[in-house]
Length: 459
Image 1: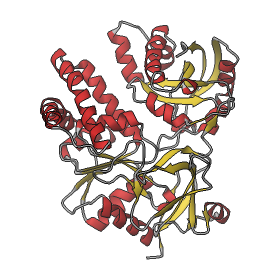
Image 2: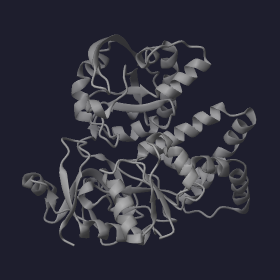
Image 3: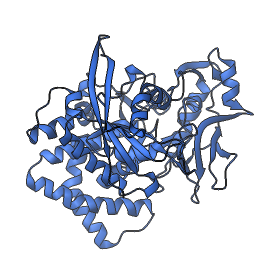
Image 4: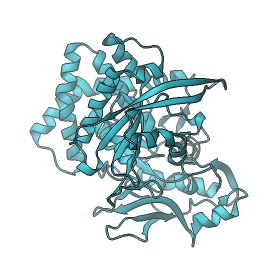
C-alpha cells in the first residue's frame, strides 16, 4: 500500500508543474472517504471525457471506480462527448468549472434560438428555479405553493433541459480544480442538478472537502471528508489565512524535488497556497490563491477570480482576467466566445472575418459592455470594473496563458500583456498591437491591430 501507484502532474498555476508521487494507500483512502459522504455504487455509470493525467479524472475513473466497481465509459471521439453523455445517462459526473460554464452558456444560447413559446416558458420559470435553489442553500422548508410552482417548472421546462444535457439519471454531480462562479452554481441547482463543489490538490490525491447532500452552499467548498484535517494557518482579524490540510491521502513528495517537498509539507501539513476561512456552519470558504489576492492602491483587498467568475456566467464571455493590484481601480481584459458572439453578429447582420476582426467591432464592444455593467451592478463600488478591453486572441494553454485545467496563469499574463496593461492605466484610448501569433500546428504569423479601451460609467 505504501508503494508509489502513480506520478501526477500538478496544474502549474503559479509556476512550473511538479510531479507528485501518490501511493496506492493515498488513492484508495481518498476514494473510500469521498464515497462515505458522496456514495458511489457498483451499478453506477460514469463517463470519462477529461484528460487522464488530471488528478480529478484519476480520482474518479481509476481510484473510485476500482474501489466501488462502477462502470467507466469513454466517448467515441472528443467531439461526441456531449452526445455520448446523453446516450449513456451517467449517474455520476465530475468536471472542472470550465465544462459547467460552457454547459450553462450552451443552454442560454439554445434558448435564444428556441421558439417564442419555449423562450417565454424558460424566462418565466427560471426565477422559480432560482427561488427553489436558494431555499435549498438556506436550508428552508418550501411552502406548498413553492413546491407546486417548482413542480410545474420542472415538468414544463427543467426536465427536458436535463434530458438534453444527459443529466436525467444524475445523482452525484461535482466540480473541482478551480472555483465555480455562484451564478453558474445556482443555475444548475435551479434546473434540479445536485451540483457540489470539491476542493483539494493533486498533493492530497485530489480532495479534502466536498458539499454533502442537504448542506450545499455555493459560496463554500463544503466540509472536510472523513480522516481529513483542515485548518487555517495564521488567520488575520477576519479569520482569513492559508488553508493547510493532512490526511492518509497526502502524497509522499515531489519526484526528485526534495526542496519543493519540504516547502510544501511542513510538520505533516500540506500548505495549499490558498487563502480561506471557515464560516459559522463549518464550511470552508476559499477566497483565492494567496499570491493572487490583490490590493488596490486604497489598501482594500479583492479577489480577481470572484469577479471573473461572475463575468464568465455570460455566455458571450469565454475568459477574462481582472487587473488592479496596487492600482487605483480594476480593469478587465476579456476574451469573447467566438462561436456565440459570432452567431449574435450574424443575427445582427454584422460582417466579420476573424476572431481579431470580430473582437474589434464597436458593436461588439457595446454588447459586451452591457454584460459587464450587469455584473458591476452586483459588486460594491470599489470592486467594479472601470475599464475594459477585448483581447485580439483567445487565451490558450498552448501559449502558456492557461493551465491545462483552464486556470489563468496570472504572472505570465502580467508579463506578456504588460504593454497593454500599462496603456490602459495611462489612459490610452487605442493601444497598437504588433505581435507574433502561434497556431496549434506550430506555424506563426505577425499580427498588427488596434485594441480599443472602454471607460465604463461610474456606478
